[in-house]
Length: 120
Image (tube, rainbow, N blue to C red; front, side):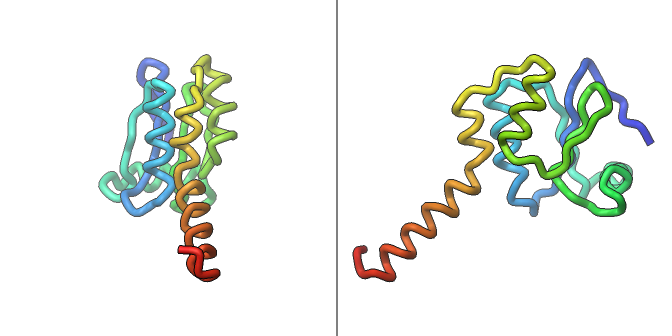
């Protein structure tokens, strides 16, 4: 099954329960990327397509690019490089959005350590 790529838009398959979806959506928006978001929980054919791309797994986010290439669960650096291949400029703020989950985890760890040592 092939996606219909409209006007060179990127397709992002995701799920509302995936913690990586919001940061990647933020990265795409900050980089002003033309994309379509499709939830695999609401679209059964999208779920099947994600399974085809990922050897039977429903791994999200999964991206399909206008040239037919795909990326599954990319980190922000991988996504930045791929977007640059398509001529998008990825500003620093987009990288922050793409790494938001790691930033949040780092802050939580630091806070837990500070509490453990009685500093806060």
